[in-house]
Length: 193
Image 1 (cartoon, rainbow, N blue to C red):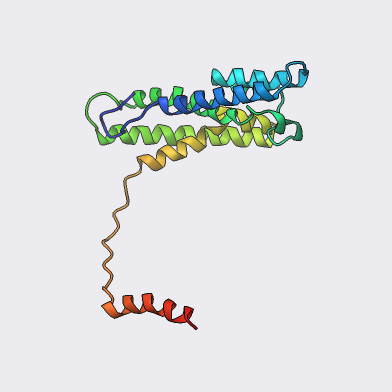
Image 2: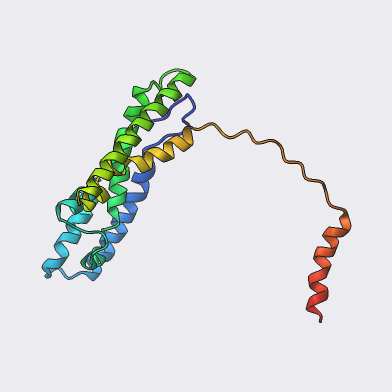
């Protein structure tokens, strides 16, 4: 998906091009090291399979996995929860762009304002959902679910949508040539002492 109206080179393939080689290398390395006869390795392998489909975060949540638990350090695919959240986000974001009219025709400031408004509204809803999950003791759901994490990604989108600041040109007076020479010579003179 590539929009012609200011949102340049928005591509979904970034995560996919990184995720697949990482999963393949991790899978091969894990297959070499892991024992096929141990039952403890099965959840790790399932996490890897779920990561291929972009739902490792949902699998880990369903398994009641706590990210910082001691037993999770042995799951080489535990880090794929964040890739899954990102892939799920990239399934939603293009639809929001289209809903706001971006990607069709020329750029109009009102379309960008509409996108900023929707992004802000979704950011607020996501932040409230995150706070609700945290307050109700569902920290794992707040950690693994996209609706609770959407606000973080939306905040980055709002930064990208913001116009660049118009800073006044900073004009510094040029120091005399001898100051530059002195800063080069002084350390050499000290090193000889």
